[in-house]
Image (tube, rainbow, N blue to C red; front, top):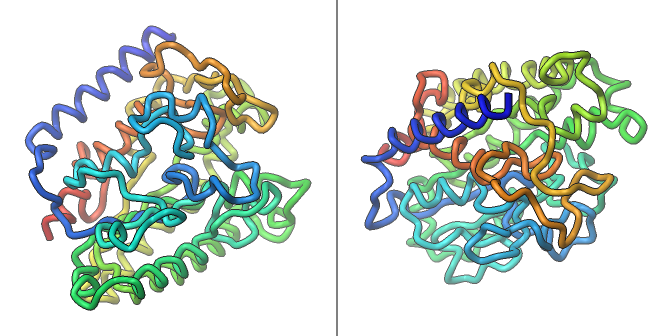
Length: 351
């Protein structure tokens, strides 16, 4: 099974990289700036100085990253980093925590580990920068831009990848949060979408027009959730993935609504279920690449697996760099029509 999985993963990476062949050569950025919102899937160091257990500013995180340990929750680049390279940015977009006035003209990364759509999500781990707070930070960033720079905001790419912690570090923690007692899975998905809708409309009011909204991955296939809930002999925890589907099924219509109600809006939905579906016939490896603590983050200074290109997960929650490559490449150029709707990122950049 492991050999079959490694062959499939290698073939998948080859296909998406081949499809990108004519697109990734860029001598100048395709858009004037690039802004990143989300959680630990895109965090590049904003949590480093926060009082929180959700930190990745130690080895073996960053073991394959060019700049070493930065606070990224993976062994190498995040999906946001790779998308930035495809867009032609030579430097990594800086985290808000350290971004200078000179740097912010090309973009800012607001992502924060354990952050959610809901303010309380992840609070048991300590401080985090929720999406509402990230939007406030973006408003502050805009105030630091010159008048001419503000005029370019409508041409920039914005990505938003958040929502996982509203399940992992909220709804599915029955002994800490009461959301599962208040809402059914269907009601909770609706409540999340309603709040997310308000937040995306706020981003629009702040100048965002080319906005990439990522759906959630199958959280029931992460090593932590599989270990915690069990799979009853199935490849993943089906009840969790069914709950996630209720959220994702509402997200694409929300994107369509935002576009229909705002004639200059160019929101697009990235379907991570579709992007990762070629791996769906093979059970996900349930063993993280690094040795994990009780909270399923990497043990500090431990030695990770040697062949990291064959690992889907780096720790108990977060994808390895090779997984981020798959996500980023098929987000940038969709291989299948259902990967991105109505645009993939390469198309969005050209609009």
